[in-house]
Each structure stands twice: as C-alpha cells, then as structure tokens.
Length: 293
Ligand SMILES: Nc1nc2c(ncn2[C@@H]2O[C@H](COP(=O)(O)OP(=O)(O)OP(=O)(O)O)[C@@H](O)[C@H]2O)c(=O)[nH]1
Ligand SMILES: [Mg+2]
Image 1 (cartoon, rainbow, N blue to C red):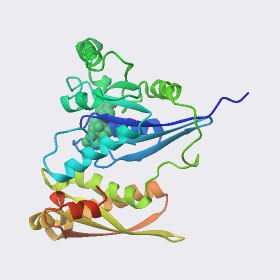
Image 2: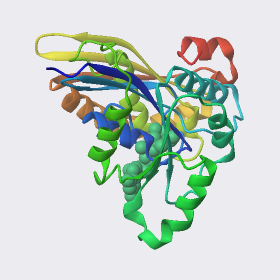
Image 3: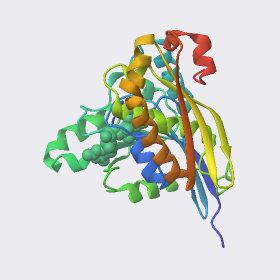
C-alpha cells in the first residue's frame, strides 16, 4: 500500500549570515535564494519547494533576525514573524562562529507551538571539541529539542536533515503542483540575481541602500528581454553604482546576465537603469511599492 502523502511548511530562521539560504538551496537542490558573504543578504521571505514521491516541503527562507534600525529592517522582521506563524516546523539555525542563538531569536522562539529543530551550521570550520560548549548552550536555549550539525556548503548531513524533516511533516495533500519550485515569479528571482552582484561588487552602505525591480521580463523564442531598475537612496550612490564611464554598472550587469542565462538556459538581453528614490528605506509608500509590506 502507498504511504499517505505528507506536506508542510518549514521556516528557516536565524541570525544574519549563518547560512540559511545556502541550506535551503541545498535542501531543494536548486539555487533559488541568493547567497553572499555579507549579512542581510535575504530581505524577503523566499519560498523554495522540495518535492518527493510522497511528500512536499515548502521552505521559507527568511531575513536574518536583528534589531531593526530603519523601516525596511522592520518590514524584514515582519516577514520573519509571518514565516514563523505559518510554519508546521521551524528550523532554528546558528553557526559555529556564533555563540548560540541571539537574544532576539530566543525571545521569538519562546512562544512557538510547532516542533523546532535546531541546526548548527558550518561545522566544517571547527574541530568537534571546539563546538562542544556551543552545543550545550544551544540545548539549554531551546530546552534540548532536536539538534543536528550540518555543513550546508559542503553537503554534510543535509540528506539526513531532510529525512528528519520529512518524518516530522504532517499528513496532507501538496500545496503546489509537484513540478513547481517556488510561488515567486521569475521577475523576482531576476532582480535578486542583480542584487547579489551588487552585494558582491560594492562596499559599505551601498548594497544596503539599493532595491532592484524588474519592470519587464519578456521571453521570446531565441532570447529573453529583461529590463531592471536599480533604485538608490541618495544621489551620490547613483554615481557609485554607475562608476567611471559606466564601468562598475557594466561589470555588475554582465555578471548578472551570465547567471540569468545559466538559470533560464537561454540567451538574455539585460538592460539596467539606475534611479534615485530618496530615503526609500524609511518610506512606507516606497516599501509598499517594493513589496516589503
Ligand atoms: N564554511 C562554510 N560556509 C558556509 C556554510 N554555509 C554557508 N556558508 C557561507 O556563509 C555565508 C552566508 O551564507 P548565506 O546562506 O547567505 O547566509 P544567510 O543566513 O542566508 O544570510 P542572510 O540572508 O544575510 O541572513 C556565505 O559566504 C556562505 O558561503 C558552511 O556550511 N560552511
Ligand atoms: Mg539569506
């Protein structure tokens, strides 16, 4: 007899930079969520779906938990809250560099009613004896619920984690068609690819002052046309993004286009403009237009 179908929502939460997006990508086997070495890479809730013959897991990758300093960060934390409320299972994630879960996170986890699994990532960076004290701390913080050590980057224990998650899923029919990988549109992922390059190529506040919106995404037989706008906070940042003779923007757009071509398996024509939306990170109407609220 066939096993009953299982399905559920799994939300991944943790401090910035602990490897949440890397792990979600590894669990679904596809690079959906952007990853960089910088904190606050993820700003919205990214759904990524893992399908099996008798299960469907809908992961929500979320922004790293922090104390907000401006409205955009408040909206980011709102997304974390929503992902926690919708979850059937919560993966609370930390890494070997962090000293247990941060205070904000412990507070948020206290009221959770659904099962929590603790994940300690980046174990490739430390010897087991160096992490022993951390493991004890995590167990006290979460009152010794299930804990697994992984390396999302080097695929250590990821399959085992996935098995545990499947075993924890409630019974139920799939939420999405079995060939679907996300409920977010292609435009969103195209914009994220550009933002990933901006995080990689620009310094200090610049990447954190940028929003990318794809205004046109048109697939034709031989080529996909993508038109994107990079919005910045201040006029000076526009000059920085464009660079001397447009070199900086050219480098960013070329790197983004190459990734898009791999992702879509098609030739891409990418047009990128830069516009100023003064102090958009603190403006409710801009944040609404940009899909944060
Ligand atoms: N050594 C090592 N590095 C890792 C591992 N997992 C992720 N990283 C690196 O950690 C950095 C952050 O990874 P992300 O996946 O973007 O982290 P995140 O938690 O999603 O970060 P935010 O979106 O900013 O909250 C990247 O440079 C990853 O390559 C791991 O298992 N081992
Ligand atoms: Mg992330």
